[in-house]
Length: 270
Image (cartoon, rainbow, N blue to C red; front, top):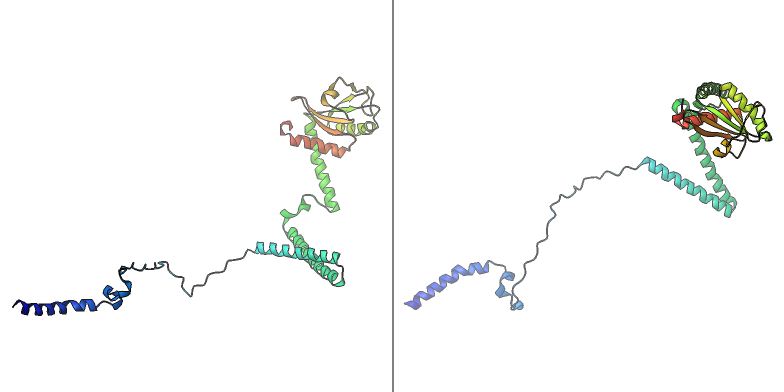
């Protein structure tokens, strides 16, 4: 009885288990891979990671980088200058007709470019007053005369104002020929603008326009006067002393120097 029951049960067991074995692929059945022997355990293959970033659409067109016109012009000018210099060097070192002609053609082009630039530059200056330097320092004869007349009038007023608070030390020698020429210039300057001049003779003698000078009492040594004629601008209130000129100069330069000294020292401005 037990043997009869065992056969049907075995058949039932085979019917229920065989489909599970046969459903697997032959390469996945470990008992079907005899060549592996005992090394039947295989590490499962590593799956490749997929890039989750979105791919650029095939029809997407990247906008080209915009070029800088300034950089392009600078590079173009540099390349032309280098080409011109190379042509010049070749024409000098190998002065054949062909090389000299090539250089002259490039030089002609360079001069044409310069001429065009000069013409445009002039036109821009004509229509842009703030860029026209001739409005500040004119060049035409009538404008130059007007400019200097106006400037001289302003300087005259400025020097008269300075003369109210400042005076001049004048060091000279009777034996100095440059002092003989400069003394009338300084005398006229002082009379025109109202400066008081303290004339100091280093050798005790007079000078034209200054018949009764003071004798030097050591002031020249303290100021370091080694060259005559010498003029110093003094401000009695602050006891400041500033050198103005050494040697023979004209009246216009003397006026310029006095005004410049005051403008550079705001504390001395009247």
